[in-house]
Length: 313
Ligand code: SF4
Ligand code: SF4
Image 1: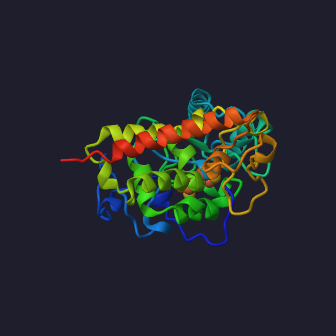
Image 2 (image 1 turned 120 degrees about the horizontal axis):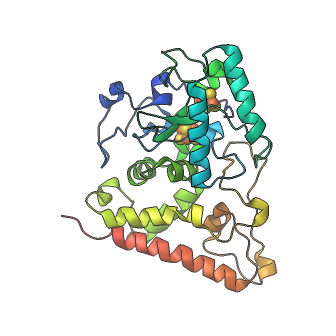
Image 3 (image 1 turned 45 degrees about the horizontal axis):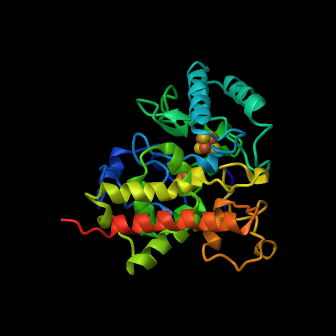
């Protein structure tokens, strides 16, 4: 996790989980019945922990590893969670655990200026979502907050909120929380505020009205099509080898800019989908490649818009 000077305080309850206290704040249930609106977080919508299977650890550097495939990450997190369960809760033992994890996974991270926290693991009764192994509510910690032993320290862990939390429109955050059903894609997409906004704005232009969560209720086809649209993040075939990572460096200082597309070399005008193509990280060998990419984006946007616009009863 990196720090941000303007972050409001995040409570322990929020950082970890789906607390009963937050049920009282619930003003509008999502389709799967978890809290959405929350006046205690910036932007009014809590994104970090959603339900038993949906959560995010992107600011902890979750995806800043050499292999960001779902299978690898699931196995990596399961293994370290198992290992941590046997670690005595002493400073020396926890530090030694961190050293062991970092020895195997730290040197090959795509963004060297971005930490990968060895204490990201799987949490919950079924270990079905990502979370912090040092949190006082995590298994084995017996209410003790060990996050002070992390690289950034307990204060940053408790108080950081990413730019998407603060700047994505509420309606988009509600939709992300509602349609994505597992942590892997959710965490990859939820920090992509520019990409998500560009995709959803395109749908709104086609619909000629703002997207609204109510449009998705009792509309599984719309949920499916929107999910397919967001899966462009993981399925994008035009990501160049030099930027071949799903990890997103989304902090407010930009040492790792996404590459611009060289339209002059392609002999064509700037694509109407330029923002989306850049945010997906793209390189095209030819104009034909570019047109295929535009068609892929266009098809999924239109399919999502068509599904969303089906009248509901
Ligand atoms: S990246 Fe944003 S949404 Fe994800 S855990 Fe961090 S603050 Fe929460
Ligand atoms: S100690 Fe926990 S909250 Fe802090 S960076 Fe690591 S996983 Fe994230």
